[in-house]
Image (cartoon, rainbow, N blue to C red; front, side):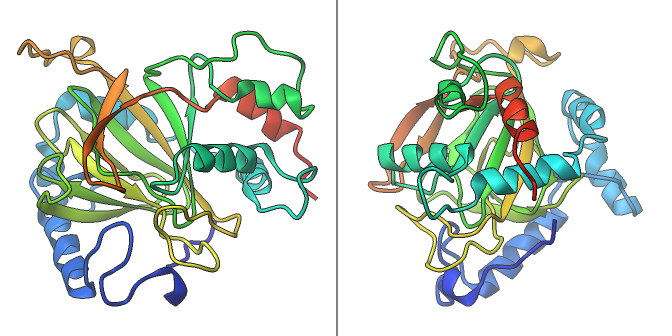
Length: 302
């Protein structure tokens, strides 16, 4: 997939636009901060002594997750099928399943452009849509599970997440397709200090623990077509990024900390875009991987 920088229409040149609200000069400074941060916020193949030293400080439990994910890729046919399922359609009959889900999510919450969570274990809230539109036979259990430890996230171009944290989990955000920008923050607050900005391309991953890089925002900076991203925005292209996320609760690593709190992958805190207030997101997924893969396999690519 070709990486595409945002078009002039998609970015406010004075402020940097959604979702980071930074000028070009601030962006350069934040990228430099991310590139120099210790420990390194990006895990990849070290090509210098400095990179090796900065990655040496990444917690072992996180490095283990990154090593296990290092060879993951979406196949060419899976990427192309996702494009078909995400593409805007002229008629309802020709609309793909992923675009249908995005529209439903946008109707429910238009405070930020929607993205899709795919549970690699368990069920998804919109699995039944696959049966309603003829992709596969009827399914039981229409409601999705909470707190899948392994999630595929699909980011349409110019769509993004709110500022959010991941409780006490340790995990990775591994880029599978396209391009993703990640902004790191020092705390969960609308006015939080930005620690650094980084770009992920396939094979690279960001990481987090309760103590380090726990608060971030993810954005797909590719070409989203006409319009400026922000609340209520839906892109008009089939460009997208995809990422693989793993979230381990404290008792699933060697660094469990009992401080009386109960923050797990079942619920993440975030900052709302409309009123800048703190809220909580129960981590239901939209689809299950078993359903999505069957949908992709039945998608005509010509």
